[in-house]
Image (cartoon, rainbow, N blue to C red; front, side):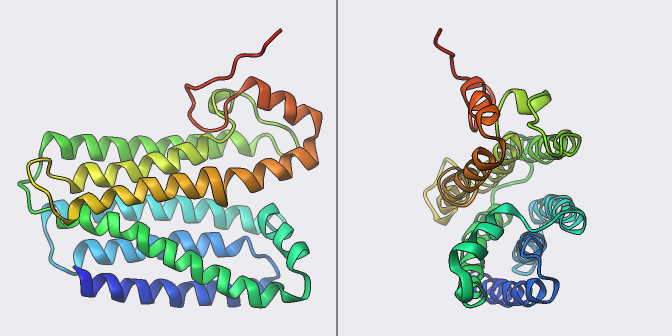
Length: 256
């Protein structure tokens, strides 16, 4: 798998260079997230199939494709209809005249991140254990729930433009779309790991761990929370007091 992994890493680097060119032409950096989703999905599918086609690999590739198409199409539709994503707008202001140069390298870092994530996908497909196991059914179920849950969260949010969405899944978590995105990456270690042996498959745990770190501590929640506090003020502060940030079932108590 490893030569194919390096090839896919190069493909991701080229795709993110293309995303940089696309945002420069359109003036909307939100498009780079759509390119990231589609290209990560493409790299994952290739990594699942090119080393050798197997029943497990076909299932993993199909699930990756469904995830990438849904997420990429959602972001592309949002980019058509809305101004630049708040995170990139903030970077455009912060970086000033150096924005284009710094964004290019920032997107190359995103390509490296995507390559690390696709490693979990490839290891899931490469598992030589008999297929299917109970563990495989659990992994597929987790990924299906994650894809559906993220889709529902995105659909609920669309009806609350300009307002704080605090109903449905958004009444249980301030970022249910991020939670379900992370949950999807938990599926790959379930498909990859055989608990009876110690091998490369355990590296698949880096996928959910890395995605959690990105969403909760780096490019997801921190940027978006700052933007919402600037744009919604006290109303969003009250929402923060009522609803936890990430895990839907972890809710904060309001002290009276």
